[in-house]
Image (cartoon, rainbow, N blue to C red):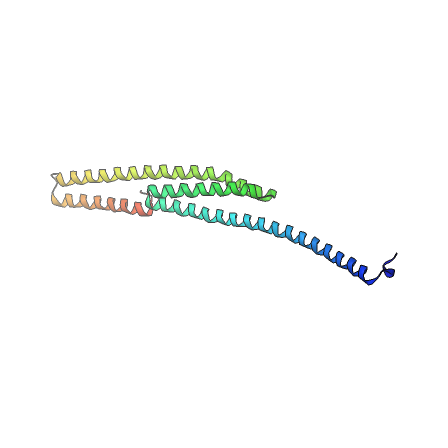
Length: 180
């Protein structure tokens, strides 16, 4: 029995069935594509969040350099912990070798950053100690000059030189200039 010998009803039924099967197949393909796009959207969102958090790390690091306070250290460490967490989340989400390599690079860079930031803290502490010593020594020199038996002109010259030294010291603090 060929298609030409069939009545109109069965032909319509077969045609409708074929359209229904094609529509179902199209729906399945669309669902799979939307699911893949949703996964990619989640990955892109986490990547963007990671990027923003890394900028926060840098901002808090700069706050520490300017303020030298414990709050900036805590904020930097909290932001680094968030970066670690986001990188770990991304590890489970990415599928391509290229993406996995990029996430692993981020994860291996974090300990290097931690080490460098710890070194910055140590150097900053050392700088603060040395500046305190310089200030104490300058005050001691000033005391010696004012208590000396030198004539007023000599004492004034010595005080002017001491003030020049102190000005250079004060310029060093905000500008991080190298004293010569």
